[in-house]
Image (cartoon, rainbow, N blue to C red; front, side):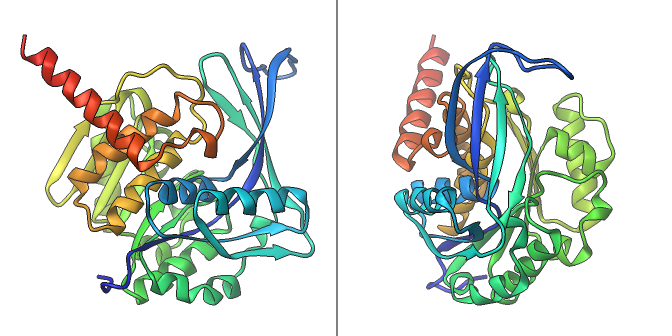
Length: 325
């Protein structure tokens, strides 16, 4: 476990600019559709998650790379603007900042292509240079938008410093064997969505009970203490030494689903860094994911800690009032 001085969240991974185009429906193969909105939005799983952790009042460090260009400057300013420490967001002299074209439809569903750019050139020396940030953190949060060997190195460094490792295995490869043992062996908490759970477990997940079975398989196969599977409108399941439990999703109007999973991960990491037990952190993370889908964009859609708690209090009060009749 970390020391009293370790209260931060260190996020290692990708940051890129989303170019978001919205139309009534997503185009099919070979099809063009006419859209009605386009926007530039700071993105990248790690960037989104770091922004959410900072908005939830955690001291947050970001380790990544951008290019020497306008998008890189904008992304650094956006992270710093929500309170993220960008000391270890380095500038790559050879590659441009990553970009992700994102297509969204009227129901808020989306498809994207991630072009990592400079983020893909994050190297082992970048991780080692950020050791001080790791040493001040209680939690490391990593994903799979950078080379997996870099995430594995970060996880091993965190483990050596007594830092808890939360692994959002996204985007998931086809098959868990693509992720090295050096990474799996360092993971304390695995966060995945239903599609990612299917890929990593090799099982079909048609409902909540199937998600529980898949999470049990992953927990046993890799010795992961806690496995969390987010299921969109079907809520979230969590499995740890106390067994499995299911939290239903809060019904909300969906504008865009971009960043909902990142909001969930960022809040879970920041609450964990504060020493919050899983069963207290899960409702807050679940609420953050719900709030994120009610707004367009990535960082601008992420809720503050105060907004998350107000939403949860309001919904719990409404549920209590309705059950009284």
